[in-house]
Image 1 (tube, rainbow, N blue to C red):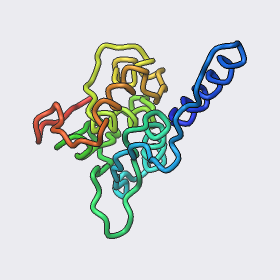
Image 2: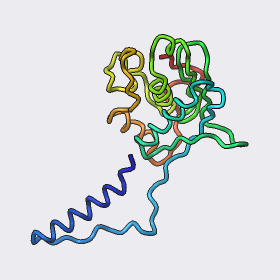
Image 3: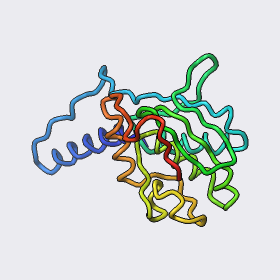
Length: 187
């Protein structure tokens, strides 16, 4: 969801409406020639995510649709990825090193128990984006993780989660993750 063009359009519409109602309004300042702060681009390498590659790509796309301050892109040949994504037989987990960097494991144990692969992917990427687990929690909270149960397939962050990621990446500052380097977040 990229809301900047929407805000500009609503502002202009309000100015026109106000002037038609007899008020005085000036046109919204033009943003032509000025670029909005570009999102921080993070690359991810899903080459070792095996059967979960499509779920990982969809999880990244969900974050791209949901926030403006960061963009997740697949790594290109010869490029070093910020995020490595691996499939293994354990429980899903994330090993953040710094904000926007780390390793995600899409564990088959949770998938075998019936958890949704896209929700797992989006949830684990949420850890790399600086979000902690919020357990127990409802299905409407992506970061409630497994506590929402296997029937929960919601892969979308809620408004508070989106805001927290926007705050984490606002101004494209690189900060340390809340989790000490080398410590895993196991879901």
